[in-house]
Image 1 (tube, protein in one colour):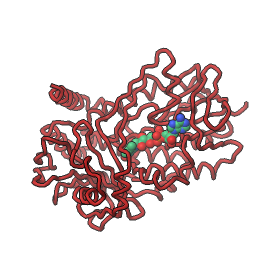
Image 2 (tube, helix red, strand yellow):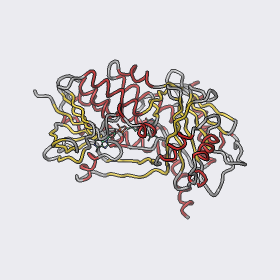
Image 3 (cartoon, rainbow, N blue to C red):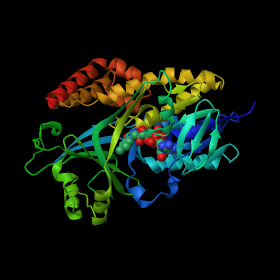
Image 4 (cartoon, rainbow, N blue to C red):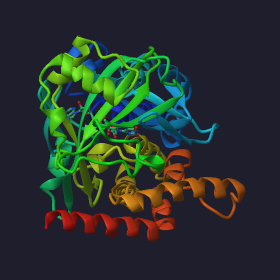
Length: 450
Ligand SMILES: Cc1cc2nc3c(=O)[nH]c(=O)nc-3n(C[C@H](O)[C@H](O)[C@H](O)COP(=O)(O)OP(=O)(O)OC[C@H]3O[C@@H](n4cnc5c(N)ncnc54)[C@H](O)[C@@H]3O)c2cc1C
């Protein structure tokens, strides 16, 4: 039987891992991967300044470990952490993860570069074709061809949309009947700052900061009751140590409640001073401040699809193309890599019958995508009082589940990041709490609109 030619659109973590899995299945498949951007191993400095770090937890690790010998190569490029430190002025609060389930912090582009280099090394050009600067322009589901900016029409036996939150393959799904789709911008803008890590900022933890304006105090337990400026919003920083001695810092704010003082800054010395106050101990060089000022702010988008496959067009969506979320729970890449494991398992169960595998993929994975969305949306309460309860609940469940592991489940964040429990099961166990947070957040939103 001739090998099935799988055209993968998008060379992010999901598309690249899928190519590994398919080619390791033997001669049944060939893979042709098209990536819109240049080969990221040759990216410009401007592109590198925008790169951000992601946390790979149990799900991501398990997925990568499905390809023999791949995890140690990825692990080598990241830094393992098992602590999350909340900073309030001079005070700190440690939230610990299980020491045997550390999170691997790795630059998203470095992760993709590692998967790509190993893909090329293992699989020769006969079974793997890589195309860079090759943007998908659309697909003809009836003819089973896809069009790209850099090549002729490309015939396929299976088309995979792994092309992220603004997927071009998904646009073809929108033309089909019985495909429901929702897209929403999340109230969060972000930029990335890269600075050297000062010795005072521990290397084995992720650090969380909130900007303290003059006159604002630490604000009680967890800083929840810190005095806020009612006329403008907060600025947050998530500082992630990198294995080259640096810090990759994600600076974020709510564009609907803009921090006017921060957004008005135009001069590099003023920006350095602001960032050095936000993260005490760092030094922001004039060059780093200038790069930061020039960087365009990005946002998150949520994507929900009613199905991830199209049988007639023999096409599927994986990763962010199927189910993008904000980074609140840190599960975007982890869930994207899990899609690959699920598809591989379904292909095994169907003995590589692609037509049988596609509907099964949606049947299993759409409920997972919906549950992840529910968990992400209702993870964090906007109300300060409920946020205090949420943190207390998290600490209590962590402790009690350690004492009675067979009777009490750990909190949501531990279940998503330290186990392989399906998201649908985690949502089911926590439904009452998720509904409480959802109703409280909706109420606050309505009050804000009045
Ligand atoms: C600031 C930030 C922090 C995050 N932190 C975490 C975290 O801690 N943990 C976690 O699990 N996740 C995190 N995420 C989410 C994670 O980055 C994504 O979920 C993950 O990268 C999705 O992988 P993907 O391969 O599906 O899509 P992508 O990584 O978006 O890759 C898609 C690829 O497709 C290419 N492409 C796009 N359009 C086309 C086209 N038309 N033709 C050809 N190629 C195309 C793109 O260039 C890109 O390379 C974070 C995201 C952000 C923005």
